[in-house]
Length: 429
Image (cartoon, rainbow, N blue to C red; front, side, top):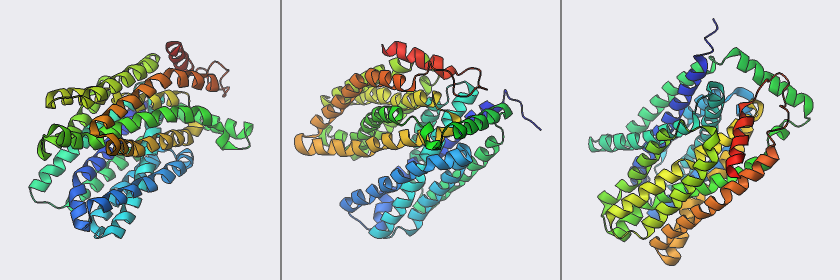
């Protein structure tokens, strides 16, 4: 039985939302569980900081390798498997991390599973957006942010009720399995004509190119990835250091200071839902306004004399950073052939993730040298650089991809990405 083509793409869109929800459930649970995991492992704060580096060490190579797996087996199937592995790795840490070495090993597994899942769910979101002809990527990232907040609050409640870390991650595994089942079901709902188009693109690429990897516009993706890295650096810098800033510079205390990351994540989620319907023609404008807001918010936070001004600055910064990476991912996604979507998304995600890793380090170095307020000002400067680079890099990227050239696949009658990129270029000019 062939499903209606009018419903199948939207089923894939909802599958993307579900996968980002599962991803958010894991990271919300993880963030709220770190103090108990530290106590269970019996390690110091310095050892914890070192152990957390193993997440990045596992994630980066996994991101680079996952692209080819996606192009071979499909994004949603890969997402289904990696989300289960992610939940299982978290459960492994909760059960087996009883010392520094075992914690490092567990976090290496968490990083590898997380990196692979990150690439897979973003690839699936890009594909769903193209098939459904409706904004999916930004809304999916909004779902992720929302579930980070919700799951962290749920874990806090469970902790107050006396449940252990293991129980929280059992719930994460259960949620991952449910979502993975839905993803596998959605994978079978792809529209037949779209399956034929993907096969035609793949066959044509193999016929025209001896090396299939040459279908990935490496330099163009690299340039957009640089913007993504700066965007992620500013986002994770705020997420990681906001509570410390509130406690140390404003004297809020631990309880009130701990609400800062939740406020940041909540504003990010609201902004992504609010801008989820943004049309591709406004992508460049959204990036410019987002970078400007992120810079202004960080500057306001750095000079905040009290809690109210600091919260306003943090909210403005969150709203600005919220639109950056999803918009960049959408720009790349619309000009990506399905046959190379996995490798393209893998490259973009890996480069951007490096900024995510280095953002907190950037703040830490500035804080050590000149204080936390100067570090917040340094984030504002970083966003100002992003503001200046965005139109220039997008213009160069358009010239490299040249969407006005004839379509690669003769059987494809029309590529909406050509019109989208042309409008983005006009705005960048």
